Image (cartoon, rainbow, N blue to C red; front, top):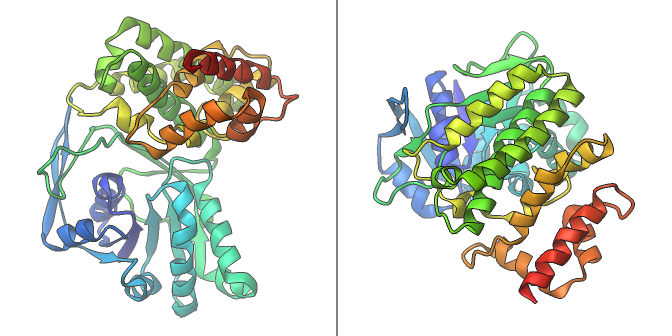
Length: 383
């Protein structure tokens, strides 16, 4: 069995690639970072180090890497003979992955089992996004190719911070992970991924993760940065930051319970588990890593505006989420291009135009005026 994974970074090696390895797949990483590809090919094994309670070390073998920028033909050939394709590249990069998969499907033996494709991204229904990009690339040929693949959405969760210098291709991660995968697309032949669980309805899992883990992580980062604290664990040690994060997550939990009929007690326990994970002092995670790309995080269907908009439509409380968005507007990191662009737009645009452009909200939406007000507050602060 063979799996091709796009994105040989820390998530790719320390989570998705690890579980595929444990499932017995020969593992082919595809990446555009030449030094990383070379580093992977220079070793015969790497170690995933779990830090924190219950952590262990796992050695990964049976892998190689291809530079897809320099050798797309090699990537296409590997996919054509693969069983599984996964990604961990970021939702905006899926459009660059799609052409290689389409070209591989054209080469694939029609009698082979369908290629099992899963995009493991922090986005709702990311595999659907990848399929749409592939369909656009294929054009009229799509009808002939679509039967050669099956597409399953997933929800993935594991904290993998930036790695300490000098670790090579080893990866440090937290012990906890969750990989939920849609069951129906696979019929009676799901991929063999130990530790993953297959579900009939993925929507509650995706939104529970995105609106709890991702919302909570980013909220911690933005309030922590505003308080002058560098680490995620250190941020939650500050009572004021912890209170702000808990407030935002109570609001997302209320939405999840109302929308998906989740058990309120179980959701409260899940929320508490997430906050314990963030407090893992053994993880060298910084507010600057977690908070990067604030423009994306403030977009319409992401971790702040997404749940806040739905909550506002239902008449639920959103004070904590709006406060978190206000903290995101103040995130000013000269090393992050989106942060720089965010601050430029706040200075150059009027509040209403900024709100509409960045959040995607319409002016008559019940959340719009609330967000416009925090934009105005930020503009007054930096004036």
